Structures are given as C-alpha cells and as structure tokens.
Image 1: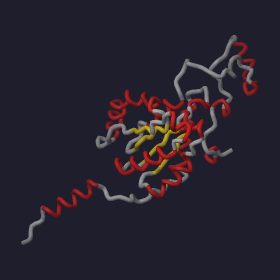
Image 2 (image 1 turned 90 degrees about the vertical axis):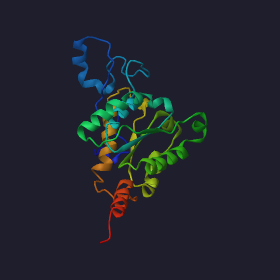
Image 3 (image 1 turned 30 degrees about the vertical axis):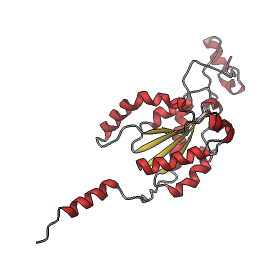
Image 4 (image 1 turned 180 degrees about the vertical axis):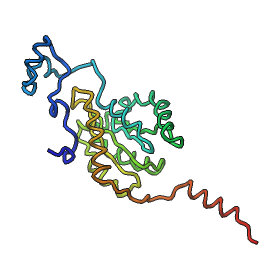
Length: 228
C-alpha cells in the first residue's frame, strides 16, 4: 500500500500493531509476539492514559524546527502552550544552520465553545490569509487538533481552496491526539504531510508578492544615483 495516497498516515497501532502497555512476564511477551494484531498484550485495548505526551504536542516540536515557516494550530489555544517554552531553543538551533533564520512563528485559531457548535473553518481561513500576508513565509503548516477533527472541519479542502490565493505552500498535518495511544505516531503524521507536499509536488511556484527587502534595496539604489 502507498501511504501517500491516504489522507493521513495510519497510527502505529494499525501499521505496526504496537502497544505501550503490557501486564505479564518477559516470556509471555515473547510467546505473544506473533499474535499482537489480535490484541493479546494485556491492557493494549485500554481507552485512556495520562502517562505520556500527546501526538499533537510532539508534532509541534518537530514542525517548529522548520525554517521560513509559520505553524498554525487549528485547535483551542491551550493546545499550543508547549510551543511557548520552545521559542528560544528553536531560534538558536535554526540560526546555527542559517544565521539569517528568524525565530519561531506560530498562530492559533483559538477555537472555543461557539466554534464547536458552528465549526472553525472560517477562523482557519482567516488565519491562513493573515499568516501569508503578514509574515510571507515559504510554508504555512496547519496542525489539526482534536476539536476540529471531532466537529468535522475539513482542513484539506480549505487549504486546497486557499492555495490559489497564497504564495506560501500550504501543508496540512493530521495529528489529532485522540487518534492514537502512541505518541511516536506524530513522526509518521508529520513526515506524511511533508512528503505529500514536497516530494510529490517538488516544483516551487514563483511568489505572488514582491519582497519588501528587494523593494527597499532597489529604491535605495535609485536614490544614490547621481547624474553626471
């Protein structure tokens, strides 16, 4: 199966039959290994855990390291609080690779109770247009949280529609935390979204806008000319 044809990557429970909970001995793990798909590991079918991080937050940690990009969290604002503590660290490592790199830029659609009833697609559209015009990044990455996934916001169609109106490449990442118990599924979701946009569609379009820096340099050069 070609996973790039799918809307999002499968969870590691489905793809690898992985589990992070087992109640038994080492010998039982060995004898049970071939039957993991049938759920023979004790507690593998539990529905709730507080002992690990969220797929959404790990996805943000990966995506925040991408240079010349704006990350939009389509979720309640509390879902992105982890990025606040990563601002300095991400800027430092970005500038080690490229001294001209800017720091972390992220936005949130700040979904609330009203949006749960009426949908958050309008907020997402406004956030994408604002990010493209305000920061003019090479890439705008939209991370889908639990709330928009539950209420049915279709971020793929929204970004596909907005792609003709923006200069940045729009990349959806389906990293809803409730869809997997394995936090490491975030790696699959992030790389799945990146591969779909940058491997299958490698050609970059010319910007729809003129760089402010290039415009300033051209005007400055004209002002310095002298007629002889």
